[in-house]
Image (cartoon, helix red, strand yellow):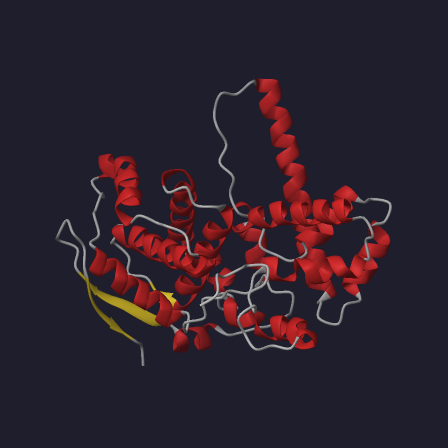
Length: 318
């Protein structure tokens, strides 16, 4: 299997060049959480806190396991898709860490980089020791969790993400200067790491090329694959996010605060706003809670008595 590239997820597939963009847009929804995922987060404090803790653990892996941001982003994608289709048992705080380890492990395998279960768990357990929640998961338990994730994701691991569309949208701007083109891609990438929508590229254009922005905006919004309303909603939200970050930086400098700020993805920082939109896709879609429950499956049979946790059974809901 070819090494997975988030910017070119169809590399190893037999797709003609002229059909690649169409294939990306048509397959995008297969690599996203369920369409009412944000509505679920809005109505469930448990899933909000579960997701926040999971993302925090994944971000910690950057330091404890030396993971690059792309691998972390891919792990978050797997985690979001998994919990959008699975019913997570409450009252078992170790489940979030087992899921995080499995998602990071799968992402690392796709990116062909090394990830040590034991090193990550040792570092993490130091942080949770005072809460008496530190567990060491054995390799078989982690492998079984990986299989649960693979099954929930229908083995679609070559995720189509906003990175997959950067080159296409940049080509619409017809920039002639390679350094400017690269600067635009780099800024869009940085915004995507904080946000989760392809309209990050439009915000990058607004920041780097304000005079040319109207023509760039017209090029993007006239694209046949783009939902204009959704793109502008995302653009406005991310612009607010960037402005808030700038304000916070100024306040930090003035107050000379010694506390360290941790970057958080836009789904955490602006969860309530994204939830009201109902989806972060560039295409509008709706799904009823009843449909989601039909597709939801349960995780059950987890042992919660042993210090080395193991998974026993996985049973789909009928």
